[in-house]
Image (cartoon, rainbow, N blue to C red):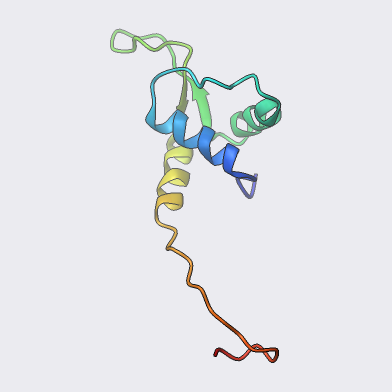
Length: 90
């Protein structure tokens, strides 16, 4: 998986990373193909039972998923430019 695809996919990844609650629209069509792709790519996984894990079965980011979120958070704000018909900055 090279790119995240669309804003809804970014929303899902950030929700899984930041929120322990179930994602409210997980069954929506836009996520139908995304979730299996993220699992196969090693970006998300289900929480496993443990003494300190009351959230069994919820999605969580893997180390790869956490790195991807960090990369998304480090993307600089784009700059606007006005160009003439030759591509020269005005």
